Image 1: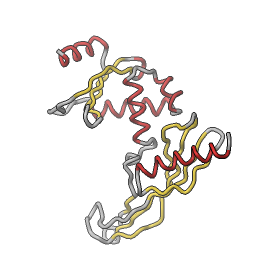
Image 2 (image 1 turned 90 degrees about the vertical axis):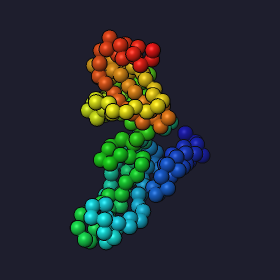
Image 3 (image 1 turned 120 degrees about the vertical axis):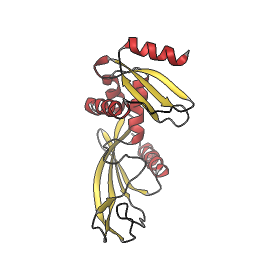
Image 4 (image 1 turned 45 degrees about the horizontal axis):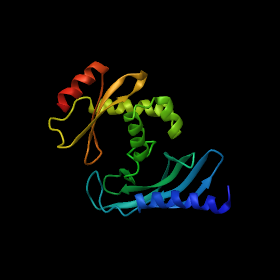
Length: 206
């Protein structure tokens, strides 16, 4: 790979991340044999404690986390982010800086998670998703399980515009996926057999 091309790839990765969250400072993007490793720092001003709501917040070092992002140019992208620690001097509890790129305690970025869901909606097998997104089968199956546990019981009211599809989840069984067509937010994921799905789809679409 030419040096100019390499710099261009690194620049695309860096610009994409900083545009997604201006509080995320990218220090470097290193190309390794199989991955792009992104070194960054996440910090901002926090005025009040999220626990006791007092304004006795001080910055207190950093916590390093490792997050997998969407592959780029055929290679995995690993974010090595130093997240700001905050300490409340009133209640003595610690708070870690958060970003909309990554759900709290997650090891995958939100956009990588949504890409997995998107491929499931296109009826791709777990093995194909693993190959395309450079993630582990455990990560894909965990997302399916988490979504099912969270959304097995639909909310009392539905969004006005609903996108409905069948997806192939674990063990090659078909499931029912409903997404808010306006926001892209998941409404429900139900593990079911094809016959049950057909009944649901026919009832909703007719």
